Length: 84
Image (cartoon, rainbow, N blue to C red):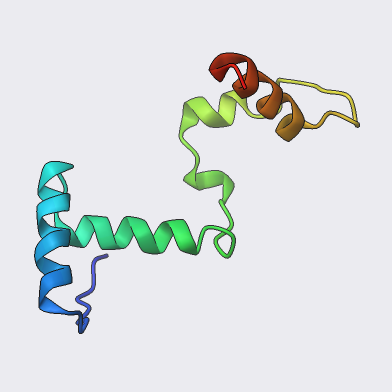
């Protein structure tokens, strides 16, 4: 359910944000909503029923060692990709 929200923002900021949203093919409301979702993601817990059926089916099929550090692997792979 969508609910209306009133914000007070500098006019220039709104104009620039509207242009940006238009370039991205979004409405300003969508852009603001996505930002709020991004900054509050740690507070929101994904419930099982919110996952799509395909994701639910794939969940838990990959098994790793207890000491698997995905951040280290990601860093190594990005370093290889970008030659750092």
